[in-house]
Image (cartoon, rainbow, N blue to C red; front, side, top):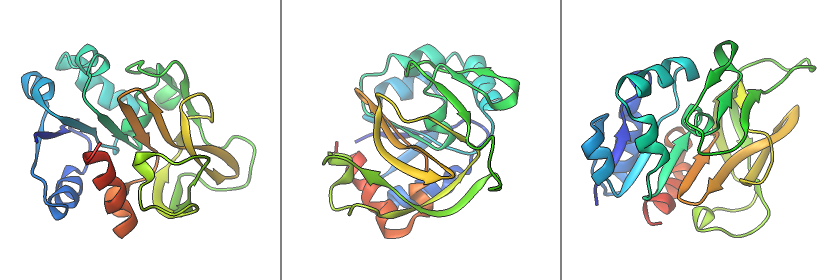
Length: 197
């Protein structure tokens, strides 16, 4: 199976590659359009800013390629947020547009600090292959200031001052607001579940 980790030029890609290798899979880090199209799974990593990542995707003519992919795609943190049509980050950034909604700032009217950093629980309403062998209220590692509000595509939620989407899906596109590659055994299980979809 060809697993591609998208080289966005902004992310710590090695930790994702190592996490996948521990599961017995080989992945490659690339932004080559042909390799993206031939991949069986695509992972969009989650470090950087929406503006910086979208600039790179436009420079490499990858936006439409990603948007039209039919194989399973997993966006991690920022990689999930850019699946929306728009992000409030960087004074507003047009993003890929797989999801017909926006990524918004997490907290506007509370005393909690940003970014939201640390371990937090996820809560899901129904079984899903992505949650195989993952218990309700399992804890994952988060580092983020922007969210996808709860809506049509939400599979699981978390709470930091307000509830937000911690896992989303639209067809073959999946997203997690946390970092599975930094979430120990439970994060490895989620990655394994994605790779087995």
